[in-house]
Amino acid sequence: SPNSLAIARNHLKHARLQEGDATDLKDFEDNSFNTVLCLGVAHHTPDPKKVFDECVRLCRKEGKIIFAVYRKNSFYYYDYFLFNKAVKLIFRLKSERLFFLLFKLWFKFLYGGKFLDNKTLLSSITDRYLSPVVKFLQQWEIMEWINEKDLHLLKISYTSRNSVINIVAGK
Image (cartoon, rainbow, N blue to C red; front, side, top):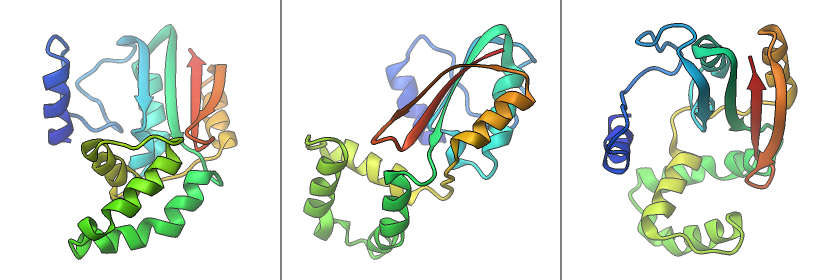
């Protein structure tokens, strides 16, 4: 988003950053990068597989793709479906300040006992509950994508209470 890009530019002064559609990065040629990172993006698009395919297209031979998405039937999956509509209603009614302490306590639990500062808390609530698109995937789906593209699975791990699948694949 333009807002995220502005924040990133403040932190990464010497990097080339540009806005784009993760499902169609036409400004980049095939095989442009040794390593392609897609962390926390694909699950906020209508078609995560298209994003994965684009990562593969951009990755050079012998390169690596590091891909992370929300995991179906995980803690976050159930948390999202239990609280998503209520949190959206709270924000639509502009009553989030009334629930601020509750959010602080809930995210302290979610993040292993530490309180988040207000800016990080708001960012976490927005990402977790207020994103317009949230998709959850199963490991087998990503493994099918890897096999379809004749990639090599180098590593698989889970983070965030096993709610995020992290894949490293080699081309």
